[in-house]
Image 1 (cartoon, rainbow, N blue to C red):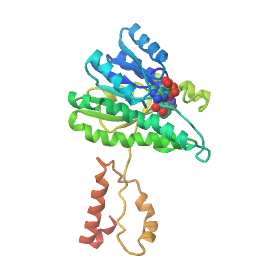
Image 2: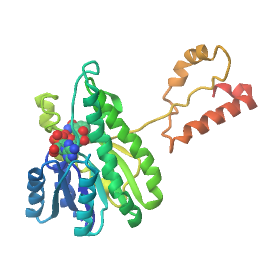
Image 3: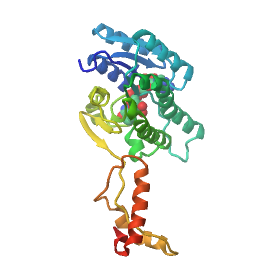
Image 4: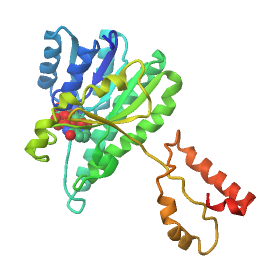
Length: 298
Ligand SMILES: NC(=O)c1ccc[n+]([C@@H]2O[C@H](COP(=O)([O-])OP(=O)(O)OC[C@H]3O[C@@H](n4cnc5c(N)ncnc54)[C@H](O)[C@@H]3O)[C@@H](O)[C@H]2O)c1
């Protein structure tokens, strides 16, 4: 049992992917807090885990409600004494083209996905720091990574979770806290009506949850974005091209346009270890250009 003795909180686990995540982590030995808005939905999933011989606690509450999430964490700590894994999974959609989208719907979606994940993560962060052990998964989406028509609010919130993950992975490293993202595809309430029947038939949400063993286990990576659906697993990265030194001058803009192909060339791209990699390379390239004009276009 790879997750024996571990305590996991899964938000939005009353249905869809969250339910499968809860059942899966419990099968792998974790004690699971099943959270959802509705106590009935959370109770059913927790009962399913217990009847299969696992350990589960159903605790209702919105991820946007700081007091409810603080109480959830207290209850889990009171029951099991530690929190090792948090899967920020709860989510909603309010799809419309940006032209028709109200800012209220934009705020609501950002609130549930981004603020909900921030609230839940903040609620467990100190415990994980003191334990010097933690595994946190943010649920992002291909909509955030690459965009999808009608999902400006959702895509913005989902990409914001990648940004949250990037920094928390850096800040958590010295405390044994590893933070990753999961970009799932699955036939759930959320995708009903959005995908064709044949795709939906292949996209059992249970096929996504195995990614969590890699992301929440002892040897988990940190700062990984794993894309999972229909039994297929891949990784996405935020990359930086080799670029081109343009320098100064009134015609710098024109030379940026002229160098566009080289600036965009993905051969030699890298995945920066942290944000300052960009700054370091820019300063290095300027220094090299000044030291030797011949090096200017490297
Ligand atoms: N299904 C997909 O193909 C897909 C693709 C990319 C990302 N995702 C993401 O995966 C996650 C799970 O989605 P799903 O497809 O299982 O959707 P779903 O609608 O089936 O499940 C979402 C669950 O979250 C719960 N929830 C909603 N708001 C909540 C809140 N404020 N507090 C607590 N719980 C709340 C819902 O009650 C529901 O049980 C979401 O973050 C979603 O954005 C899903």
